[in-house]
Amino acid sequence: PGKGENRPDPADAFIAPIDARVSDILDRCTRCGKCVEVCPTAAPAGIDTSEPAAIVGDVLDILRGEGDRSSRGARWANACTGSGRCITACDDGINPRFMLAATRLRLNERRQAEERRATGRSGFKKMSTAVKVLSRLQLPADLLAGLTRPLDDDSADAPDIVMYLGCNVLKTPHIALLCLEVLARLGTRYKVFAGPAYCCGVIQYRAGDTKTSGRIGGNTVAGFAGTGAPRVLTWCPTCNIQLSEIVMPSTDAGFNLQHVVPYIAERIDLLRPHFIPPVKKRIALHEHPGVAGVTEGAIKILAAIPGLELVDLEQPRVGYMCNSLAPVPAYKRELHARELEAAAAAGVDYLVGIYHACHRELCAHEATSPFKVVNFLELVGEAMGVEKPDLFKQWKMMQDIDRILAEVAAPAAAAGLNFERVPEVLLNMLSEQPLPIDFCNKP
Image (tube, rainbow, N blue to C red; front, side, top):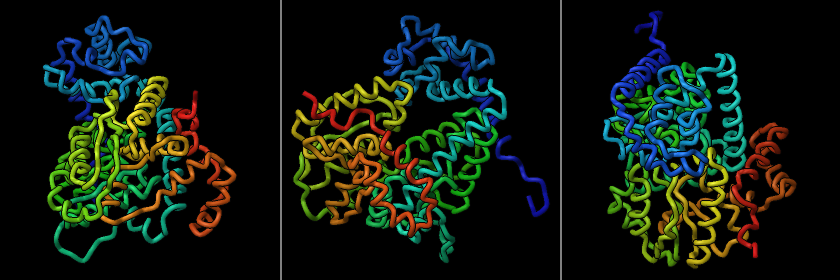
């Protein structure tokens, strides 16, 4: 539409296709129950799965606008951690992970509209404040601006890719900077989108505020499309799933979406010549299966680094990132405890994560473990002779809010932060710990 003409509301274009996809699920689903049978978190959530067909029936009732929020189907939907095993198990041609996301949406839509909006606003404000504070404490203002406010360049050519970092990775910005360093070594021309201004809309979607979620996600996708890039690479698995399974089916995006790890792995022969110093370390990989190809890609990249020895701790692989296990907190603590014990028993030098949220939850255990906890891109950086300081882990390992506040006072002042906000953000940072920090020292 031209200037002054009515423009379509992205929310309307978002909601109608979701409703159509829900109708398609209601037509296709045969209630075979295979999605329940392969779900790794239904039983840990305390759900009796002896009647999988009945559980699916509960879910379909909710999608019809009926059903009980205390039913096993509702509890199963709320316990979903996004592992994705249900997707390949389904023979009915539907995506059960989307089915459960739509079920949670329908349950949340039963609340009053203002309550939904308030929940979405509150969640977004909490996230954006934490990202703003932690990123400004760790990055110079000009560098952070280059990540969060992409500027038009002088080139008439579209970039090869959009690198969509998402929001929360900026809490651990060394990971984001290493990712961009790798893309530069590959010779990829990219444009970066990062930070709350380019949210995928997942917080509002989870709150049941469908209209706001549609506007936010739709505007972000439109921003990607406006660059002319044929491909958008994601870092955050939450953003990847939200865009690929919720937002983009409602749009004519005009680009392909892919996670950055498989993208790098496909081009490993271009990166291999940059691996100069050997990294003679015994490592284990902290894995999640939710986004297809990411674990396999990380293993392929790590295998190309001279000197690395990768051992399999043979641990359960659940969820798409550590924070996706929030619906089953006791199970998450158990998984982390078992993995930390297995890593110590295997004599690894590094426990290596892929995603930023996993790093936030696990990194402080380095203080009391016989191994270091790092992101896999830190090993890639070491092999390339590049190091980015991990200030987040440094502060997290202190486990002392007064010491941390003393250390960040100067960068907070330099960044112009309201220092009254800083303690709350740092206390929330310290609370992202599934086990006591001295767990590995127990008898």
